[in-house]
Image (cartoon, rainbow, N blue to C red; front, side):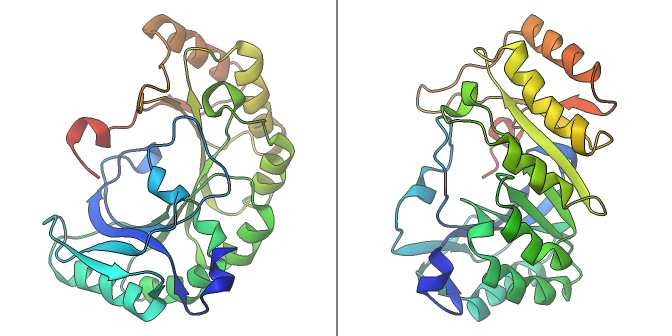
Length: 256
């Protein structure tokens, strides 16, 4: 894993302040720490920089001012905390810190080191993850407050499903604030969506589920038609009690 190569430091893509554009906390102001590297490569990925070795990360100077410094990777954890605290001290209230990526669970040592200090700033820890690295999730579980867990399907990712890994992952989160996000596209069948829904229904059926229409990126990904989206929602609500459709709103509002 990347963290093993650089003790006490991690490769970052960026640190910035913005409105959360996805999931149950959509529209809330968050401080984002975007880690580099990912263990999968989804067809629709809108963060291609997570698949390359970035020599430098961009670090916002003031919350939302979109003025960035360029810091050499890997960034020492003390400096990551400094960057986060500087944004917190610059004015607007943040609801939480989003640890995102890439895949932040490739950086468990960094999370364990940073999360208690970030909590000390009065900020809960919100983890955005691809939802299949159960062992890594177990390691950081005590220092994470809310989890946005993906269940990825072949129709939108172009990758084989990892439903058994998803089940093991979700089973860890019985006492946590968690929701599941499933990206849905035009080519997704009822069988494939049903298989993803069954992961939740079989492990933690009261978990909120977000159906997120895929956002086309570089010509890849076609969202469902309005009528198909209603069909998908109907299928989901026939199996689970808490289902919403929420698109990527940050793409609409010009957030990062």
